Length: 74
Image (cartoon, rainbow, N blue to C red; front, top):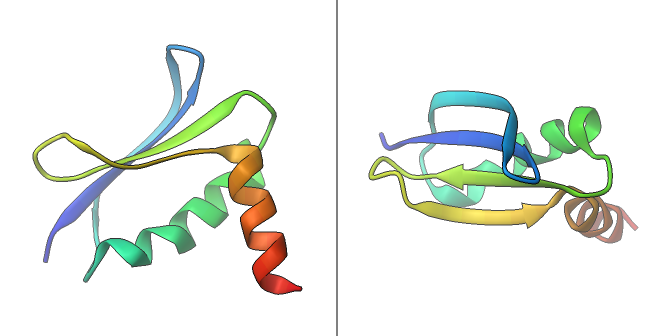
């Protein structure tokens, strides 16, 4: 099963990292992103998901992610 690393950035600094999260498919990363936005959802922060090669698979602003989750819940 592929593993992914999650990072929360403020500017060029990483505020939080979670490494080696195994997911069946990349789409399952959004549940982890949702949890991160609850804790690190301040304006100006970004959440990156890196694949096993270190490439960014998902990059989203924390505020944008919050809005997406709110829209889906409505």
